[in-house]
Length: 272
Image (cartoon, rainbow, N blue to C red; front, side, top):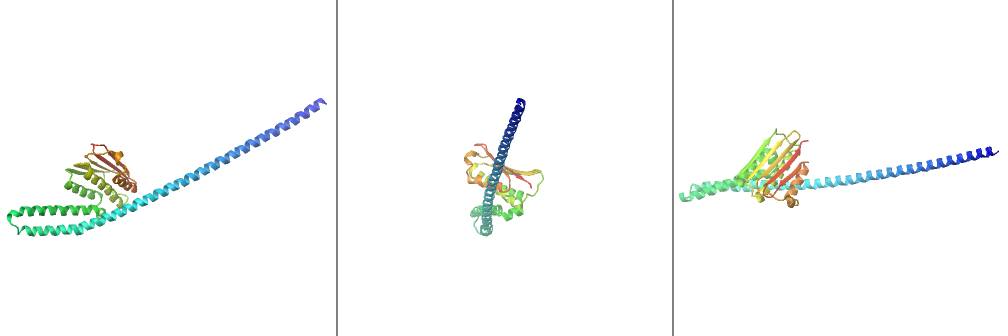
């Protein structure tokens, strides 16, 4: 009888243990399932949040690029108009003045001829300068001339203006850029550099290197001027303008300078 009761008690205790085990297993499964759901919810939330943030960044980037592109186009139109005015109006006036001085030279006394000849020479030089400048401002002319010819024209103009030495070196095999407009953008960046060299650097030598590599064009410009502190120039409009133009064509922009050591600009343009 005692054995029967003990056996029944053991069976009941075993049933209770099995129920407890089942309950614990159920609780563990419920906690696990809840944890998985929380993790999935968090991951999904983070993915959506990151996607929204990335979309906002891309929209802002596209907006900034469009603003920069519009500003560049407006600047190009203004420069084109100035180039036309120089060529058609100022150039014609100087050409007429040159004709008048040539006619006058035949009628003035001998003691005045040297002064008339000097004035004639100055007018001729001015006419040459105006024509060269009008070419460098008109984007249509730049597109027709091409990048290398445009740079060569600008370097000759700089040599007449200020620099005792200005040269262009071309390495590798010349090839067209991804877009004709990119020639103009690179040239405008270089013009900004030249302008700063003329106005601020007191340089008398300038050098341009075009290195055509397999996948990229590396443009290097150097002057031997005073140089400047890069950190203090970060907010300058000229530097901002050059950087924004470089960004439009996906070119890497790097400007190096130290006070007393000149300036070096490296522009790395990727071929498509």
